[in-house]
Image 1: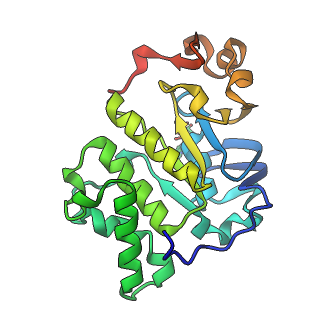
Image 2: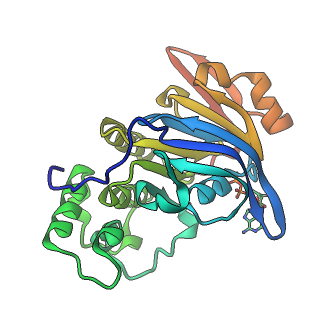
Length: 269
Ligand code: ADP
């Protein structure tokens, strides 16, 4: 990774600061309302909430794909409309055209586009960075495969690699565990550990958390607004889950230094 000319960023500022954010769509102007959040650099945050709670909308607002109706977001002290280079986004798998004729290498190279400049050719250093990232995430052997040939877990990791090639400081993963088996889930968690070791801040949405909640420093329970935010042991209470999910609230399992909650009937795989 030494060949990286790293994005300069102010590590003393919150990785993500949202102040009284409201955002929505033409037909649904209040998908998010009055969101205030302060996430420190290097933290790993699980964003949970029922379907339609606004998790994807929050990520789209952070990444600048959605105009706010009110409020403000900054990334490491820089207004989010000027800080896209700091933010990597792994969209929901259903939003990606897996038949697109791009190789794993091509997709990861897309992470370099803002560094290269549009309509310019990748430099030798960009190719070296992409190869390094692929090796770091054990994807080197897959570099020439068309992205549609990959397994579900590999697909997530390729898009995480794209964010690493971009040198993102904040990574947003929208439902990365949807539709993958437990082995792939563990591979994704291991990959997140690699990112955390590099000080990258991670927000990961899931509408049901099968993984141990203690993989995360904080949990944000969202239902149009912030219902609760803090360490998993404080936030994941039956009362908070009932308030967010209603009668279909997930069940909490404590024990063996683990904190899980499950909605088994709702499992995607
Ligand atoms: P989640 O990711 O938590 O399932 P979303 O952010 O997708 O929730 O959706 C939040 C709300 O915004 C829902 O009511 C959903 O129907 C609505 N919504 C999402 N995308 C659009 C869109 N493109 N146009 C209009 N409404 C939308």
